[in-house]
Amino acid sequence: MKELEAMNVLLRAIGSSPVNSLETPHPDAANAKATLKRLRLQAQSRGWWFNIDYNVTFTQNSVGEIEVPSYISSIRMLDRNYVKRGDKIYDNVNQTYIINRDLVAERTIRMVDWDELPQSMQSYVTYFAASQFIQDELEDPSKTAHYQEAAGQAMLDVKKQDLEEGQYNMFDRPKYRQNRAGIRPYRQVLGHRIIQ
Image (tube, rainbow, N blue to C red; front, top):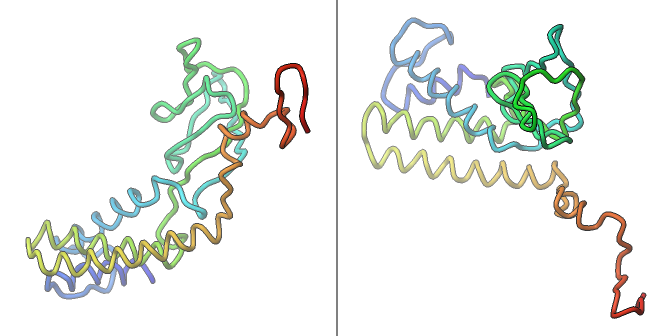
């Protein structure tokens, strides 16, 4: 689905005429586009299979700071003393933005453009945005409920695809990796005897 198609879904939902361009100077079209953008970013903020990157290296600039691109919404560093604060990396221990070295992020969440979203997420964002748009423009509860139900069905597809594509394993989470470090499975210590 193209972004223009999604915008026209929102316009039709409030009884407005469809448009031929994303840049149409019509107030309803501008509001629909803004609603789509807001909810596209909101939907991605959790992190899904399509917008999570691992082991990303961030390089320092000429003054020793690390600037974070605007499309990165969340960073989890390998060294937990460093966090994203605004558009830079901040050192929590030394209370400074001066890092003076490159850093590796264990996990980042990237905000992708409309065309990079999978079809399931495009559908979810479109229907959820339509429900919000109706609520803002018409305040029609029955139409809002219709689009919310469609958004709920689309979200089920997103979650299903996330489980299939992401191939998540609860034992890959940092907490479990730390707990398992250096411990052989099924090894138990009782008193001074080791049972295997």
